[in-house]
Image 1 (tube, rainbow, N blue to C red):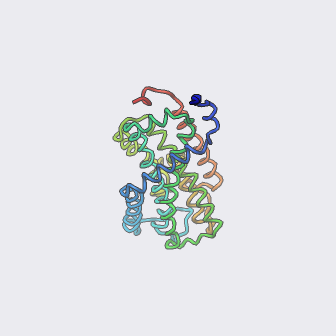
Image 2 (image 1 turned 90 degrees about the vertical axis):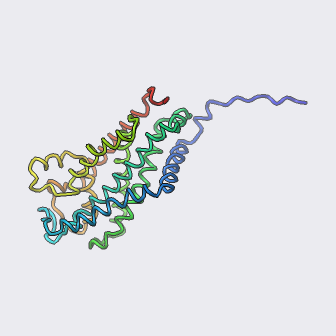
Image 3 (image 1 turned 30 degrees about the horizontal axis):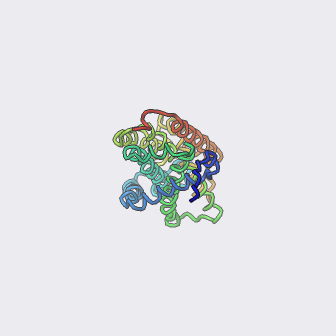
Length: 280
């Protein structure tokens, strides 16, 4: 009987493995987990939708359109892009908070021990969260015709592309906040004192006109340019002048790309660092 020689794994097999494969697997896991947890769907879409309906009805009579807006703009029309960004922000929060849960359950340690790059781990998480955010915000933006917004096919593609960029950016921001934390309570605390005020001071909830020193906070807030960029695309049929709370689309795109690069770079740097937390 001939003995079968033992074969040893070639370490070069790890190099031959496609780089996109772990990214796809981790992103797909995010999608499966999301659609199995229907409460996340309700939380990410239901609350911003209620905000849009209730605040739109309550502030309709007291809302004065900003200097750059048409005189007949209602508060629900003004608030519409901000709610879409809020949906993206909530989805990013819910998708990245699972990092803390994965570390607690031991799944993250298994992924970190796998022969894949940390960059692939980060991109897998970000791609999964981005897909979820774009799907949910896209469903909400389908209500645009009810706001009197008629989007051409080219404008729709531009809105989708900018929404992907913004979703990827906010998911990366959620990732770099969640990665060093050990408790979901700490993440919720940061969300309350950082992420929600960041959205409130982005020109999404109220215009920058006549806000005094807050107008300068709105100008230095990177999320302001995400909200303004989406607003300009949705109202591309109307010539809106550049203003404090509504920069030109070129400026919005540039700032959002830079902010995205910074968030992704910090997220990858955090994941590359070896620490005792990764073994717990």
